[in-house]
Image 1 (cartoon, rainbow over the protein chains, first blue to last red):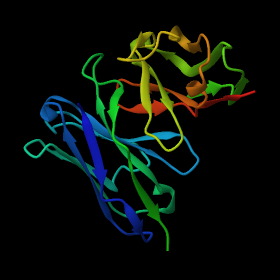
Image 2 (cartoon, rainbow over the protein chains, first blue to last red):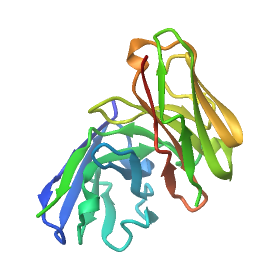
Image 3 (cartoon, rainbow over the protein chains, first blue to last red):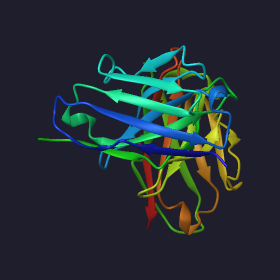
Length: 121
Length: 109
């Protein structure tokens, strides 16, 4: 069974930093691209970032580029998101989700339950 | 960048009725890069449809995806009580970026 367990969320002041983690199990982690999707309170889904199975390719939404860094540790089956210069609009539940290899990593097939991030003074 | 518009914003129907949800792209897109998700309150999204028409594992056959070009549709043939929730479409582009539509809420009439 595929399991994704996010952690690291919490309350942080504007301008602060936070590191999110996603522990994966139940599949060959290094074989799959994976990403982060967030959802602000009462709002829709927003893609944040994704990373290839090897970690060699990363992509970011314009809203987080230059502030967030995605990385993965294939030995530990862990995904991370380093978030710097946080803003109020980064307040959201952050989900990690795997990208299905069928059809070229173009959709998210398995999702974690999310970790909440609140940016407020 | 492709912008996805979903309509209606809210669809009010009764159990047993047919639901037709629309997802329109701002430009023609490759059908295989269009997916649909269902999200219930307090839960993570769940993949329903990928490649515009293929049902994900375990998804009941009352869910059907169709469309091409700029117009895509998610049809729920007969609404069950558990289907009253929010649905999102999603596109993947050639720059390996993802866009979600704003969602359609299906609620009980």
